Amino acid sequence: MDILPAELHSHICSLACTDDGYTAQSLSLLSRYFFQISLPFRYQSICVTKVPQIQSLSTRLQATPSHLRRIHHLFISDDGCDLQALVNSFMTILTLAAPTLETLTLITTSSLTSASLIARIFRACFPHLHELTVFGHYPFPSTPSHSLHSSVFIYWAIVILMDC
Figure 1 (cartoon, one colour):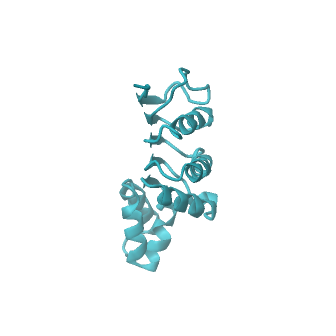
Figure 2: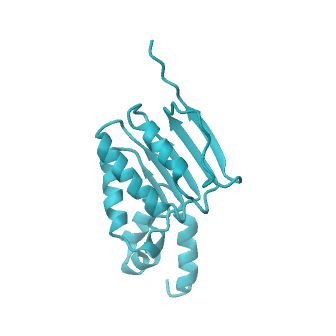
Figure 3: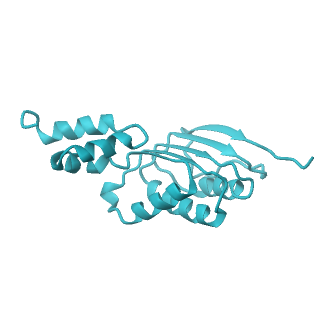
C-alpha cells in the first residue's frame, strides 16, 4: 500500500466501484486505510430492489454529508408493498441523488404507485443525467418536462393496464 499514492488508490476505487455497491462495501472492510479511500465511492453505484432497502437507503443518504453521497448510477425497483413509505423514500433518494446522477433506472410493478413515481421523475431536474430507463404503468400521455436535457437517452417500457 505504501508503494502507490493515495490519489492512485482513490482512482482505482472509483473505477472498481461501478457495480451495485458490493465492491465499495468490500473495500471498506479491507482496512482502515481502504475504508477512508473508498468512502467517497460508497454510493457511486446503487441498486435497491425492495421497499425496506429503499427506506434504509433514504435514511442513510440523509445522514451522509453531500460530498460523500455522489450517486452516479441508481437502479430502483419496488416490490409493490407499503406504498406511501415507498413514495416518500423514493422522493428523498431522488432529491439527494439528482445533482450527480448520470443513469437512472426505475422499475415499478405497482399500478398504484408507478404513475406517481414516474411523474416525479419527469418533474425533477437532473443536470448530469445521460440515460433514463423507466418501466411501469403511466396512464397520462405526456412527454417529460424541460428538466431532462435533449441529450438524455430515454428507454420506455410503459405498461398500459386496461380493465378486462
